Structures are given as structure tokens and as C-alpha cells.
Image (cartoon, rainbow, N blue to C red; front, top):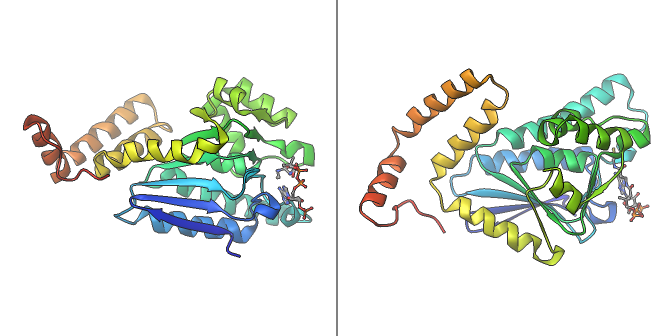
Length: 258
Ligand code: COA
């Protein structure tokens, strides 16, 4: 059984972590396969958005595969962390929007995977947490860095230091997820949002993501310069010419995808 499934529905790519008997825990090979899938989809012109989810009804991803961490030692530990971090960085820097549908447990590496996505939507049954300290380890796939940036230091450290899970509604309250759906409607709800993005100018979407993502690590001054550069870049495209012309001529742009 392959541990990562990629399904295509028109311009949407749905990537499913598929180890349901292990609650989709991320072993080394699954991380490698996910990274390859993201790289391939990121360079494909006919992909407008990527949706990430987990197999089964119980879990999105219940963390790194704990068995693979036993006896890893200093070098093994660092290598394992960097392997997971390379995946989360690839998601964050992908030119495609990556949206996660959190269909159950998102724990440890599972939450860290979700944190690297551009938007997070959760089933009302989802449970989210970074339980690493209860195993005597720390988050290693970006959790200590991305969670405080997203939900503030106090909320993040409460999750990181207690290791407690929170429910979907609490995740919504602290800004960890964008919205909560009834479990049965999660994937359809996320597909609808993804299709809104797909219908926009594809190069504009990619550059807008790049501006927001890269700018987050810059001073405001540098970020504004980046934005102006990218505004210049989009201004040289046929996509922009057509988008503006279509508005003025009261018609739909030729590049419109649905
Ligand atoms: N790594 C490896 N295997 C895992 C796993 C993980 N992170 N999370 C779950 N599994 C496996 C279990 O070992 C079990 O396998 P088995 O049937 O071969 O024994 C199977 O998935 C089902 O999990 P189980 O614990 O029986 O389900 P549950 O409903 O009782 O509990 C959880 C669900 C999520 C609370 C529990 O599995 C758990 O705490 N998992 C670890 C979460 C974690 O600490 N993640 C961070 C890792 S760094």
C-alpha cells in the first residue's frame, strides 16, 4: 500500500497521507514521498491548488512515526528533524496554494505539517496538539517556530509546554485554523474554497503567496520593496493585460479556470 495518494480533480490535486492503521503517522519514507509529490505538483501548470488530508475518519496525521525516533542519537535526531523541515519548507515555499483539511488528529509532526500550509480547515471532531514533551522530545518539523508566529507566544507555549490537545473550536478561537466544518462536509468545503483560488489569475496567486510568505521574514521596508518588485513582475504578464482588459470590457478573462 502506498503511503501517499495523489488524486486529481480538474485543477485540484488532493494529496492524502495513507497509513490509516497507524493514524497516518509520518515515517521517513512517507515524508520523502510527500516531499516528492509536493515538488512535482508545484511545477505542474495544470495544478491550481493542492489540498492535503489524511486517510480514514480518525486522523489527519498523528505525528512522526514514534518507532523511527527510538535510539536516533544526536546526528540521527538532527537528520530526522531536517528531513521533516525540508518537507514543511517545500510546502511553504511552493508557488501553489496548499490547503490542509484536518480530518481528525493533527498531532506533533501532523500539526507541524498543517502549520506549513497556507490555510487550515478542520473537522469539528479534529484534535490538534504538539504532544512531544510528553514523550521526552521537542517538536522538530518547525512547530516551535511556526506555531508562535501564527497564534502568538502565549497560546503557542501553552500547547508546546503542556503537550495538551485542543479541539477544533479552540483552534479556531486562537487563529490556528481558518474555519471549522462538520466532519462529513470538510473535504467538499475545502474544495469549494480551493476552487475560488483556482478561478483567480494563476500567476497573480503564485506571486501574491510569494510576497506574503517571503515578506513575513523581512522588515516592513524590505517587504514593501519585495511587493513592489513582484507588482512589477506581474505587470509584464499577459495574464495582467487580459485580466484588466476583461474587467473594462465587462467580460470574463480568457485565462479563467473552473
Ligand atoms: N507513531 C507511530 N504509531 C502511531 C502513532 C505515531 N505517532 N500514533 C498512532 N500510532 C499507531 C498506534 O501505535 C496504533 O498502532 P497499533 O494498532 O499497531 O498498536 C494505531 O496507530 C492506532 O493508535 P491508538 O493509539 O491505538 O489509537 P487511540 O485512538 O487509542 O489513540 C492517539 C489515538 C492519537 C491519542 C494516540 O495514538 C497517540 O497518542 N498517538 C501518538 C501521538 C503523538 O505523540 N504524536 C507525536 C509523535 S512525535
